Image (cartoon, rainbow, N blue to C red):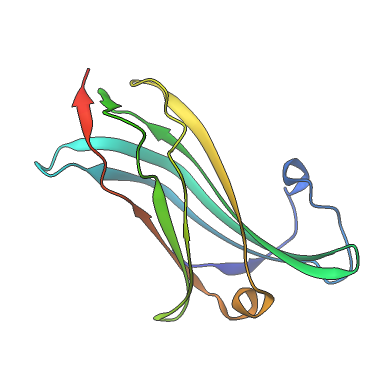
Length: 144
């Protein structure tokens, strides 16, 4: 997904206060499925939002990458704690940093669950980043 400079609005629920030097980059994908080996859908991800925020905290520069989405267990349940996802922050085709999550919050099948993850990012990576690859890791599921 493309990360583009954005207005610093809608950040209050993330605890971001207006400050000098506040910079924001945002990207969004409406929906995508995570396919199983047989081609059926194992998970649906919806309203995937990525927000990169550069600000100052206690006088020092601080960058956070927020990845948030809703996930639906499409008539499936995880066989065990799942592997989550990887996010690769990039400048063009050049990878800058890779972030990995733990298991997704999806305690039961057949229901949408909000997920939010935050990662620390070097300031130079924020300045150079223009895309993010979101990779839903393969996960063993069982039908409900």
